[in-house]
Image: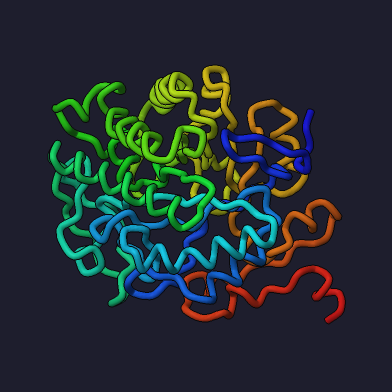
Length: 362
């Protein structure tokens, strides 16, 4: 079986190793969603990853509800991303843009209006806003015209990603955000062509895939799901038939890769509500499958050895270990991240984590 350090082809992407940097929201852009010099250093430091999946990046003001997250709907945002991507490429890396619409998880104080979702529902818990945590608001059901407009926003963001220099895009269809709100039955209560049956609940996700792939090419398009866990109030009572159907559709389209955030029973970030769905999807989908959640070097290699995963995405380990690939290869200890600085505004806990050689010298 291949090792974590063997190369891998995913459509138009050729990866030197199978250790992927998962999307990590870090809140370092300005209030207009524009990145600055801090992000240049942060991403360049982690360019040894086989592939960097960018932090979740908004496709529109309406769809971006996280303070200081970046966007890809304005020319200023494109210009902010360009030096980041140039730095990754100069360091020998590859990077794709994760395209994000948060749906009902957008608070009006950030997104500028009532949030949209598959149905008139309210997310549990509280929204993180510029004014502190606030209760989520009732979402309005997206109309068919809304869905056409939002699909167009995905296309524009994908076009802007390529103008900025990204090597491809990943559609965020996981973690209880807008596409996930359509896919899974707990939030989708519609009785039109976008709700009810599995085929209809998949319709919006596939509409976005087809539109984005039509803009940038299917070979530069990937997608992310979270099939087996309750995510921000979104779940499905029968995820296996749903995601088997998704796998069949993506196989027909020859989508080159999917990423699955699939926590196990001991996960430190969200417990599973269902058994893993990846084996059932593997049986139907011949593209690359990237698994994510709570992996270390040995467990990551074990999943590849099982034949379900082709690569493993690491999230929080990449925050505190910019040289994570080298540390896994050499068996070096991993540094632990400081959660208090995950979403702060400065370099602390962002670009000041040392590589292992610097730690030894210190």
